[in-house]
Length: 454
Image (tube, rainbow, N blue to C red; front, side, top):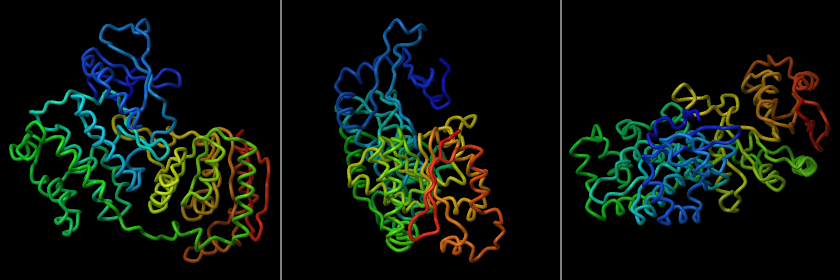
């Protein structure tokens, strides 16, 4: 049972992997907390509200070490997405989930002992806590010890995104343990001083240098009911946060920039027929935009991972998924030309995107020319990337140089892309994929290809 780097900070439990499954090993010093979680009704209520992943206990005869209390098999999560891959609304939902879990836990005499967003992930449009050993006993006479961590790692990034723009969550790649409150305070605009959430929990809080400050302790000093009141106040204020919807070239693409309606309808028809034929287990939609084809894929598979580097698109798509109550589309902010690397301890604490993501089928529609021309990637590099992600199929669209969108890309740059030709595309992709079907799209010079991984 080799401890995984993702859980090295926990002194009461650790995660290990056996075969394809992840397990959580609970040590003897977590016995009382775990028993309270399971027997008090807390676990049952959290499961009923889809706030935590479920688990099963291994039988006692499978436990061989003296210091181990329980080994549990959690619900397996096929793709864990990280905070720097979330949109504003996803950040907001995670903050709401943590506060809601705490308010429920307090009723049972427990509380979540830390406030890291990395204990949450999205399964479809629903965020869940997946760290079963996060709970500790609640003491009404002590402050909420995770308060400062919550402000640094969760509230700060959320407010920076609200006031300064949807690109801010990406900054968490460089700050996986949160942003110092003084830094957050300086980045927020002057008008944020009029917001009580910003004033009390960021600006005023930033004057206290560390958690041992007597001033900070006085700020969060509790009587019996003050922690629930603090949690409730934070929850109400965060629920009221909204952002002004931004329009970009991409999140308005299907309304203003699509080639033609005839082209789009033919493309949708072909994609739908192919997906119906191959019945994919999971689909990674690369360059998903606002989800036109993710929604089609969702009809034929239980898991769609929709990726786009434009945060406005992901925000719009996530909002649509929640409105439609779709639970099988997971929205991810990601630039496939610069996928998230492994980070933290030994570069293993936060796993790289390419080691987290495996899909039965990759959709790469109207994205190849952006990777090859905008990002200067050769066909062979893109082919290798898609082969790394796909377990079986690739559905890809080739947009030739005579296409208006490619001409637009080449307007303000030297055309050094002499190898950007269909013949070269097929040759380089043939190293990883077999071409099964090829269809020319109506009212367009574009083609769709259905490929199977070698």
